[in-house]
Image (cartoon, rainbow, N blue to C red; front, side, top):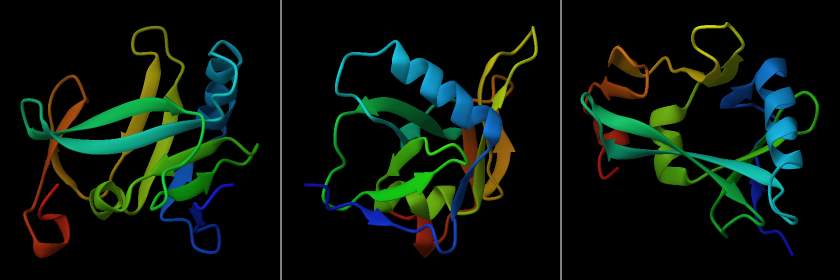
Length: 128
């Protein structure tokens, strides 16, 4: 039984159509039972924080659920949401940089590879 909290009434993370399609494509190639993408943030990288991804069979009790326009599920833990709030998860299909892209309004700077970022330290983002 899923105990995940859906926040569909006011999306705090938006999943673009391109990201939605790619999540479904990748899930189709994954192990049976995996039903969602997990997105999070951890300390690390060259700018202070980095995005992390994983595939999940079921949400954790405190996860929040965000759904793309085609129904792709993305689970986010509450601590990561403090930094990801307002983010759009997109998928870049260009020849040079194919992959997931975070358009994160909380990032004050991003490293050249786009995988690491920094934020203004506030109480909202403490303890990540």
